[in-house]
Length: 285
Image 1 (tube, rainbow, N blue to C red):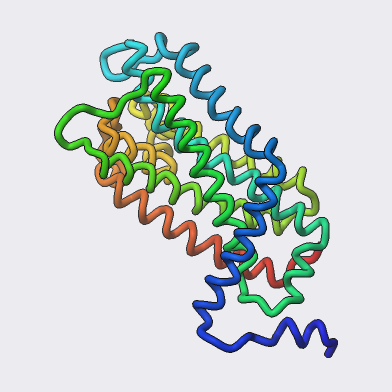
Image 2: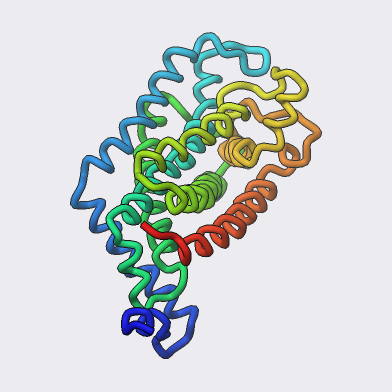
């Protein structure tokens, strides 16, 4: 057995959970430093969602019917939960591309030769992506306020509920980055990871209640949209924000969107983190 392999199998003393957290934070710090040194990555990541806000608000604002009205302000408030959710999920593509790039350069192989906790490289990477997504979401919320988005004014809407909505959005985004991580480990180039990361995101985000009222879809398509994990988080966000256009449906995720969002995100993390870590152990550049 080679010295490198022997070193890779040597686990430093101490609690395994503590070691895993420490290693994950080291990798996350490495990725955050790398992001800060390539500011165009952050800038381009901010431009796209801002364009979606402006285009959807002013192009479709007066033509979309929400409930019984086509009022532009109503659609604006309806739209923002969907834009927020789309933004956090589209970060999946860049996450997968970053991991594929590390694979292509042989960086993953070098990490695997170190006495690090299993899965720390992927956990650190996804955590760094979560920080970047949170920054993007913060900027996007400011832009949304500037174009006229407002949370509900009723007594049920308060700061805690608004923060809970953003928490659910970030949790969904974090869950989806594990899908991106698996894609990034499964393809040969960053370009393929970007394409593979976007192909499945478009039907997930558009066959939903994000941009149109799912109640106006054909029955079979409405059923898919109502059980879509993405739709559950959008519905939960609208409920917590106190925004209009909450889906009136008998489907369980639409009746209990907060719980559905939490359950969906937890299941996605559990399944795809397990698959990604398993793939990480066997993947080759």
